Image (cartoon, rainbow, N blue to C red; front, top):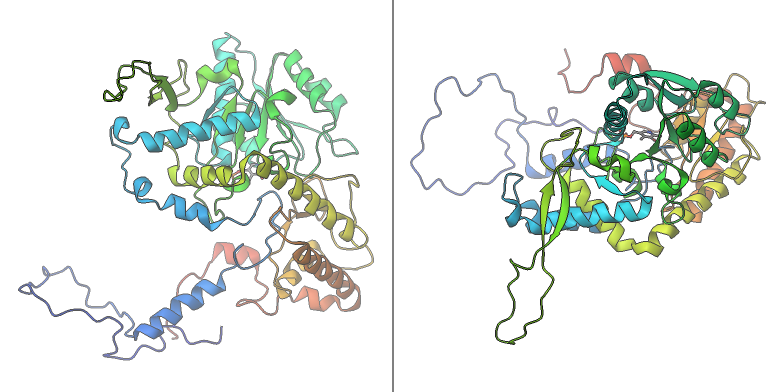
Amino acid sequence: MSEPLIFEISSPGRCGASLPACDVPPTPLPAGMVRADLPLPEVSEVDIVRHYVRLSQLNYGVDKGFYPLGSCTMKYNPKVNEVAARLPGFVRTHPYQDPDSVQGNLALMFELQEYLKELSGFAAVSLQPAAGAHGELTGVLIIRAYHQSQGDGKRTKMLIPDSAHGTNPASTTMCGYTTVEIKSDGRGNVDLDDLRAHCDDTVAGLMLTNPNTLGLFDEHVLEIAELVHNCGGLLYGDGANFNALMGIVKPAHLGFDVMHFNLHKTFSTPHGGGGPGSGPVGVSQRLAQFLPGPIVVLEVTEDSCVCDAEEGEEHAQECYVLRLARPEHSIGRMKSFYGNFGVLIKAYTYIRMLGAAGLRQASEDAVLNANYLMHRLKKVYPLPYDRTCMHEFVLGGPPPQAKDIHTMDVAKRLMDYGFHPPTVYFPLIVHEAIMIEPTETESKATLDAFAEAMITIAEEAVADPDLLHSAPHVTPVTRLDEVKAAREPRLRWTPPQ
Ligand SMILES: *Cc1c(COP(=O)(O)O)cnc(C)c1O
């Protein structure tokens, strides 16, 4: 960074604030409350504005450029979502308010539950979990509660394909189950023989991501569901890749018993850097009684209905009230209050803005964009599973003719071209993986610019490998020692000695 930092341009007596004259008697602060050694910078208003704007521009976000981070669905987040989330009626409510006084908030939650049910085919949805991984924990606890309710204590294992996201085995372990890894076959599907060999009466269930983290729709999903159900297990769906399916396939119809949604991915709320997120869970009828509460239910009441007396009409008008309910054998609360309500508003707004046809088109365009990029890039980069992808695809690292060049070098060099790098070294089953998810919100021009950068980098990798080894060159900080950066982060300004 060449610009001076705020502490360096500080000048005694300079001030960026203008306050009106004090109209109350000044009172000294109690002794000991003010630190004498607090060297705050003294700067003008324009200095402080430039300081913060400059800092904000060092950040890379989806509002600044293409962000093809595989598995994360970094689609553009429409600004109307933010407008809706800031409406005073939503912002100025408190979670302790009487439900009768927040019927509008509850109506939004109820309708969102209904939309998610409609999109997924499930019988019931709880909006409580705060993220995808939290939804997994919720879903696996529901599976455990189900087996316990059946008096079935033998089931100690959860089957998880080797392509799965790391949160799957983590959630399973937190619920007290043992994780058993299932191999993938040569086309990137679950290996049916390996699955068959592991299906017995000690299996609590299988956690399946479909499309999986290779971006491939499992060609045997119906058979997988049957194998798991036949041995008494339940099928968990990791819904992080729902952006490929909206309005096209309902997971419940594929045999899934429970699935989480990642509202912050599929339904466009800003995420990354730790949140906030939302991971509602949908379940089939036999699991509905175990969902975490509260769930919003609609109760039809004629009593509380105020009918228009002047019109003199006698006909019963259907009135309803929204209430909070706890399912009969609920696993309990998963989150304080009502979940991450702000995220629910944004997801609801997104669904209402797009409508049924728009949601389907979003998924179709996400799949189209991924296939377009895959076809352009597979001419230059290895593609281990060469078949139609869904909303993302995984390359097998740099071109083989580039010696001593790794995926990390390609990723770092992409920053010099102004792109956020894709996900790298995941999924683990692809050596040197480069996982690209363009999303539906990018234009063909952006996809082409990215493809051309990737193709140029492939050429550079052969002609001038050191250019890649030392990349990035144009970012505020260049190539970091990643381990050191994580263990000894320098997060604040320190005066020169
Ligand atoms: C993102 C993701 C998760 C975890 O979701 P979070 O909302 O980040 O907790 C789980 N599985 C897959 C495949 C994912 O991409």
